[in-house]
Amino acid sequence: MYSEENYLMIGNTRWHWASKIKKDWKFFHTSPNPIEFKDKDYSKLTWASVGPIPEDIKLCPSKKIILDDIPLNNLPASLGIDRALASWSAFKKYSSLKSKEQDFLVIDAGTILSVTKITNKGDFAGGQLISGFRLQLSSMGKGALNLETPIDKNIPTEIFQYETHNAMIRGSINGLIGFIMKIFEETKLPIWMCGGDAPIILNELKNTNIDINHCPNLVLEGMIDINEKINSI
Image (cartoon, rainbow, N blue to C red; front, side, top):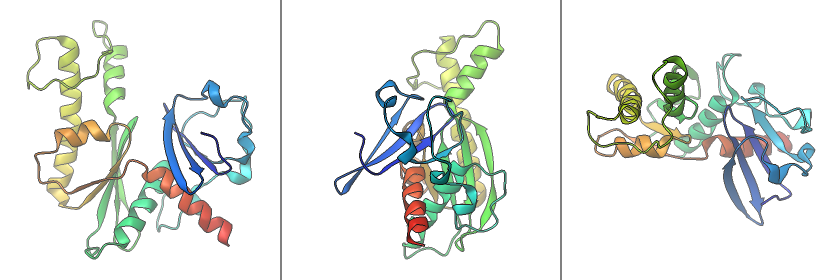
């Protein structure tokens, strides 16, 4: 799976990879510092990080993508590089559409579910953050004496649940769905979504009229595009 051109986004709980195999890009996701890559030369990777970087891998500082590399306007210095990359990637895709007069939203449904507003001119216009699905469950398990983090995270269909672990799951996903629906009701803006929990959220929203473009690899695609821009200068 390792090729001459590779990208790594170090997330809070997972690592996200892009590898170019011949002319095709392969995207995949692993646990942090996976054993199968322990003997690889990380110094050739183009990378970015929002999560902890293990001490036993040697990443090249000059290959790191940073916030200053992202050609969006008004990005705050504290913005996560993953949000900036996803926003840039979505802006590129949105700009290619005919109906691009509106601003739009980027939702990254990961450890933290982030909502970012980008104007049709490429300006960062703020956002909101909320604990992601699994973080909500784990925080309940850690914060309450009589609650345990559910192992099986399948989404139950009934509104009210008899089993405690199902009640935790149903409540957590309802919180995220309500959060997204509230934002959409207030803005009526199109949404571009990525992140590991996007599929379960999209399934819950499938019978709504919310305009969502699911692009699971927005962040990695943004890294590829930014690196190509840097190398072309």
